[in-house]
Length: 311
Image (cartoon, rainbow, N blue to C red; front, side):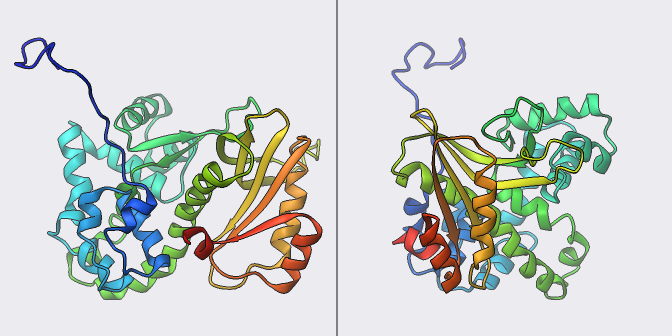
């Protein structure tokens, strides 16, 4: 692309290769349990090289232990090596990524966790945004207030910085089995974040409405106009192309059945948004209780299981 390069001026087109979609990635691991596969799709971010290193003949535990948490393997070293290749002083960036991965998503939280002064922190954050390692997410529909949060966009970086620095002494000294139960327990929460993004993408392609933007919403309850307003969050908001159309949804990635209380919360939270036409959805890893099915029928809520989304 440079002026001195042999092919300067001869380019006829260019392609920015995107990660594989969920269905494309499934072809790498067709025999893997589909619940496990969602975890691995999130970890690999749909990158073919990373997917090719996983095995659908191994369990979730064995794949993660052997491919991701064993030192001197490619995926164990990859994020650290990539950061050293791209940045001259990776220590500050490491600290920022660890903070975000462990739940500090706002600038003041990241600053408190890392000890980096807010003015300098913005510069480091901008670099990570340019490298496409993190992204800034804003609630939709926008309230006009600065409520953006930072999220690790790259799947492998998200996994790596959530677990490896926290347990580095155990991993480096060969005590993986002693901390595996803690990682395994947290994987449900890790996968729930992947599931939310998966459901948002499903809405884009399967909603009867034409959706121009999809994301989540968070903020104080707009129906309470005083200091007692509680902080609320909605997993899925889809803004329709047509005026006054909105999708509102909740996602539950857990082993027990999803119950009526989730439907009741969804109906209440849908009232936050003064749109004329609202489609309500509940997405679940597991089945739904009879009481929720009856409530959903009475309130026109669509119940979608993960297994059916795959089919």
